[in-house]
Length: 356
Ligand code: NAP
Image (cartoon, rainbow, N blue to C red; front, side, top):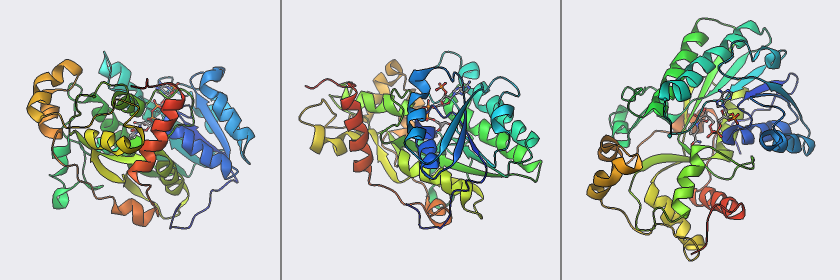
């Protein structure tokens, strides 16, 4: 739901990169429901497991979907799909923290992929707006960084200066990709760049087998990995359906401009577990108590959590100013409990967890 009036322009097709993904799934669903023709360049348009749900969504709605083959790392591969499109949603970018070669697996597809898609926009006369799915990760790395923002919290004026190839490379990939997008956007005048910067995305998926890191985090809450306790690791969170609405508003609110923090709640890992207790605590090994910070500091590196991250993100409140998105895009946010319960229910249905 939006409190700012806008309508989806269905007069031209729209392009969505990464349509097979978790976030893009809801964006595509909403566009199709509004009657849009969606051009979906994907890595493998013949992979039914990846694209079957998109075709089903189109069959059940007023809109239409056309699949194309493209890869972020193949120059020019978005040109065919972009032909005739008015709006480009660039969501594709790897979201994973388990990588062997961060340059190849995260930074190249994020940065070179953004350049590839936006250079195609430069060649496509019909494009008037590009909506980039960036991240709050392009604004901060650790919760403690948020305290250095204006008035002790991050806003859209802040850029991530602490992530690097060697420290939190996913955050670095999102930072350099968004910076690349602004450089390309500012060098031309035909299309406007509007950026959404979501915090951790939660809620159910429309794609059957989501691989987004959002699901790995949720899996660890419900599979017993944290049954003896969860760290008070702080971050922001937003529902994937509210984020889809933010993408549509970023595309079709005439005056939308610049970056937008899209985040509903300041929370932490333990709070996610506790929020699920009422409905699922009796059947699933959810965390009930906080792991002491000294213990997380001690064992963190063994589970892939650097000590610097523990020091700067555990027990440090996450603070962000989300007022621009609420005012300029008319965003409203679901309660955290709703996002979590809907997501957990879907994961229970698909066999992600064993009952205790
Ligand atoms: P996801 O489900 O893993 O989606 C990633 C998408 O990127 C998939 O469609 C994937 O295609 C595509 N992709 C990856 N590498 C590609 C390549 N080389 N060529 C073409 N496509 C490629 O993750 P998500 O959570 O939806 O993330 C989508 C966007 O939201 C990303 O930009 C991410 O940084 C951003 N974001 C996510 C969160 C969150 O909490 N989930 C928070 C903030 C921002 P395949 O299906 O072929 O793998």
